[in-house]
Length: 285
Image 1: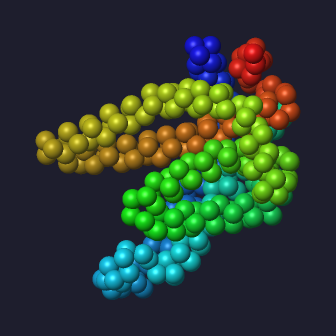
Image 2: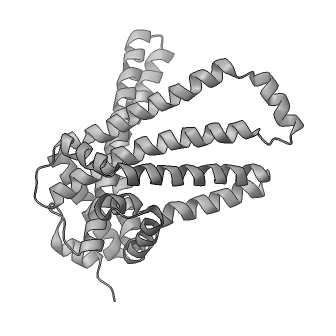
């Protein structure tokens, strides 16, 4: 157990060094976040202006808190746009990470070019993910308490089953159902490393998040003492730091996923990772 935890932190450190070497990879989660914001606004603005929410609340009460059919249609469209944006940008980042792992120097254009080449797989997987998302909502709304629990359990199982789907789609270019089966196969080999590696990454990210919290608290103290302008400025700085932290977090987890995939699927140590750590992490016995 202690060896695995040590390996997890070592894998997290290697992932951090890869991102430090290729800082431009942060561009992909930043683009993903910006596009996600656009998707949110494109749905929120029409819903806020076109829907009579008082009447909607009355309909919910009359229908036992079950939403009308159009809500599921809108939810599917929202899920699809969101998943498509996230999967596309993650595919671009994974493509660049794989280039780095193979000794090449990745460019942002390489990532987008390779993601575009996988557009059919990305489109279909976004459709599948959206369908699952809507089905989970239907289950959640089917019963006030039991439905939420069942949806959480099914959703958690689905997230675990599909852990490696995006790198599989990027590298192996297979269909979504085959990708789920392949993901499960790889997960059986790497579940321990996936857990401890993510624990190591999350610990590093927690340490990096402490300054963000401190900036926010300083802003609160300044505003509470009537020092408004510096307090607001501190809030702005904390907000920017928070966005950067989110981008770093997303990039690190995606790079780690790509590294875990390459070693498990191809039995090759990614460039930037220590061979002894990888071999020790995946040792069985």
